[in-house]
Length: 154
Image (cartoon, rainbow, N blue to C red):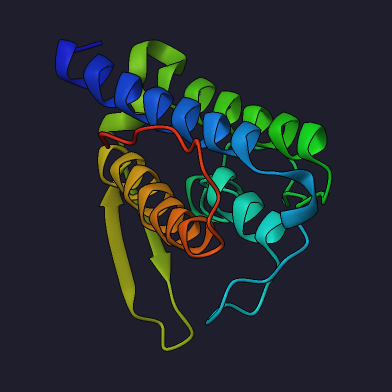
C-alpha cells in the first residue's frame, strides 16, 4: 500500500475517533432532542454521521456483508455501531494491500445515468460526510450551551 493511502486511512480513523469522543461528551438527556432545522433526534444524526458507508459499502462498493446500520438511542450502543462501521470501512479498504482504494466503482441512478468513483474518492467522501454532519451537531450542542466539547482540528 502506498504511503499516501495509509495517510487517507489514518485520516478516516482520526475523524471517527473524534466523532466518538464527541458522543462521549454529550449528556444522555440530549440524545433524544432534535436540533432546530433537523428532522431527526441527535442520536439518529450521530448514527447517520458515524456509520459512514452504510449505504455505499453494501450497495455500490459491495463488500459482500449485510446491508443496514442501526441508530440506537443509547450512547454505548451508538458508539459500538460507529466502531463496527469504522472497522468495516477499514477492512474493506485495507484488504489485499489496499486494492479497493484503486478500484473504480460505478452506480446507475434511476435515470440510468452512470457515475464512477475510485475507492479513494469514496473514502474521502466518507470523511467529508462525517465532518459535515459532526459540525452541524456541534453547532446544535453549542446552541444548547453544552460545555466541554472537544477541540476539532478536522
